Image (cartoon, rainbow, N blue to C red; front, side, top):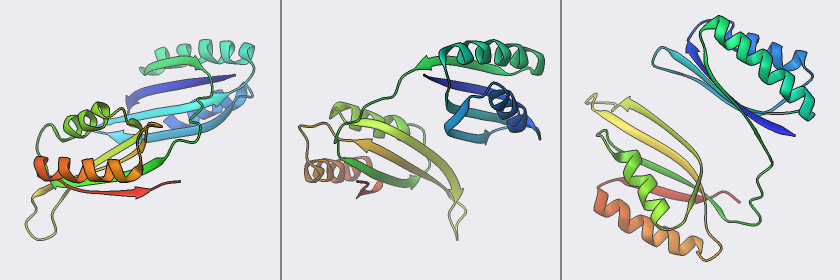
Length: 172
């Protein structure tokens, strides 16, 4: 059985060690994770697997730990997701930073029935001017009714209209 664990807390050394020690102590396995500092907070998102009774005990212990350490957390049992033979594409977008870029890109994919499997963003200063440049990388899964060429054409048109620099690469 699987569970997804999310925790957010003030960034400090040892936080990852504490959480993973609790997981390992219950003989659960971390199968997939994303961990990063956002602002002054450290955010953890991970998928763990173990027997259901182990997950129940893990949920209780993590809740106690989160309360003692001032962490916001979520524990949710789940199952493996089947993606079938869907075409996966990696999309990158760059633009001068301004509000709404993620919303525009997500709205574009949602309107086509394209699933967002992973999304990462970062802002960095441009080399010579220092102007904030927004970078987005997203992995998408095309619906069975859409070809990679159809997505590429629609995405090129979207980027031209939205004044974004974008590129799509095949991930399969």
